[in-house]
Image (cartoon, rainbow, N blue to C red; front, side, top):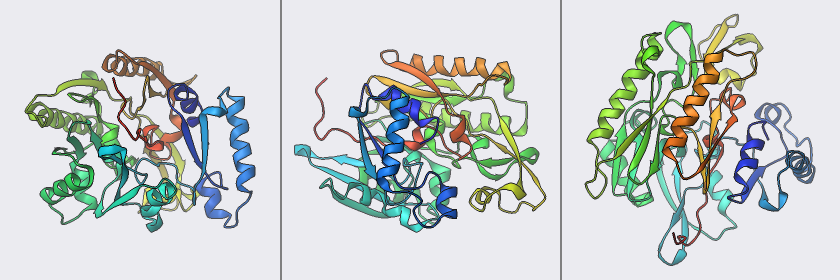
Length: 370
């Protein structure tokens, strides 16, 4: 239960019920270093409840579910709910690209008591790399899907998305921001991001509107990373301009600024084995400087509210506070009829994730009337 998730839960519980997945460990590091459960499920649940109540959160709006193992970024392997005629539900169970094999079964485990059927696929697919408009069109990050499904054609992947999620059209955007890539980047920096998940740079606002990240003009030549991110986002813009929905209609394209490029330095020797996963090939005595994968588009939509990120803290450069305000304004303009708020998402960046990555939506069994 991070310092970011508690404010997120507080903001959305007035609009939706929240189910919190938990187990007996507090972090991946603890789970790796303490093989036996350090506390009971009841003790952990009580601890979480105390923190929520201290933050002023109504526990009557919270459901607790024991998870078989700790997994924070539930967006990628979590259950993708499908709704059929008559209110019947199922889940689209894609295979996971996560290096821990049991993660592929997480969605089934979390829904085994809900009485839903399972539609399975051998194709690898991360939830954060798919965005649907609810009207038969899906956005997918092409470079990421190509990488994890090496040798599978896009036509074959499209066919599988149609079978699994009932979409009629797939729009392939290519790459996400350069600072979102993993491994060594330009200028001696490292990347620990998603490697191209589309929920970091392009989202549906409604069935006919998308919002796409944009590098502000004054920053496009600041570094090789800025220049490459700008090139990629404009390439994606060209694709979206030419795209059509299933009825042949054009999409309205809104833009939101990328966050300022922020980095963090650490000594490789001080990292745990789990943290070293991001820095393959680094020397034992190397000082690591990695990009923090910040985004204003990794937001959470919860009925009447949209929660997006902010990053400025006291003592940081004032330009980050200004950019946070610009990011908020762009998201608010995209959702004029919803309350839009920002929460401090800085802690999640050190795990290569954002607030949307830590959530999964479960729809009503029946569509609600307007």
